[in-house]
Amino acid sequence: MEVENKYFTLKQYVDGFPSESDFELRSGPLLLAPQEGSKKVIVKNLFVSVDPYQINRMKKRSPSHKSANFAQRIDLGKRIDAMGVGRVVAACGYAEEELLGWEDYTVAGPGSMLTKIPTSQFPLSYHVSVLGSSGLTAYAGFYQICKPRRGETVFVSAACGSVGHLVGQFAKLSGCYVVGCAGSKKKVDLLKGELGFDDAFNYKEERDINSALKRCFPSGIDIYFDNVGGEMLEAAVANMNAFGRVAVCGAISEYTSSERRAAPDMLDVIYKRITVQGFLAYDHIAVHDEFISVTSDYLRHGRMQSIEDISHGLESIPSAFIALFRGDNVGKKLVQL
Image (cartoon, rainbow, N blue to C red; front, side):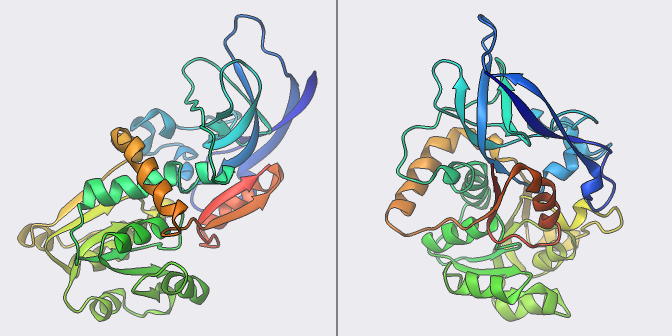
């Protein structure tokens, strides 16, 4: 059987804020039967993960390009790959797969990042969000980098994002005092209500982030989980306690601009003996099984929840991606095909 496979390519390298004109929708015939002996797998994509870090892959130059295979630059005219889940339509030995693309079907060969998903009581989308790379990022960053202790104070930026809303819940389950920031009243209400944060503030309504943090943390910050960079990182460091830990997960405020870069006071870092560490989830793949076990148990018993923001249809992927940089998403952004 032959189908018309639609897919997105990068039309031009992204410079600054992304635009729909940076992407091109193409199509081509695809035979749903790999040649005998090719060892290829054909997957019908069901959910595609939409992630801010992808913008660095779309730039002509970025330090991220040489950090890991999944962060390599996307060349012009090439299919845009992404994390996701789908159903194998032609292959042996797989049921559901991971690492797909901005396309209807993905043809994967030997060496691809394909992971069979076991039978699960959870929605399929969870394997891209809370039980996928976003969840592993939150779990590994918080427990492996931040090393929390009961009673410590935790600040999470972009706390309504795909990773931040999970970090805050892990922190509460660990007995910490947790404050998050977000960009709207709706998000702040979600953090303090449904997700159980101790406090939260709308950074867009604060004239001075440093003062906001002093108000929320009169005794200082022990742990900062950074998804933003820029002045948010500077203010967090200024309000940290001795031996504080900063897990640098993302810097979304800096992805679309070359003008503003974080410049925390290094005297604070030195004299407070603050640990500032960047990380990638896949540095901590050794804790994957533990992460799945612990998180699944929390979900099963209603102690934790996954917030998902789902758009529909392949054609909506570029607009969903662009919306991330306006802060429109609430929770994990996915596109259902």
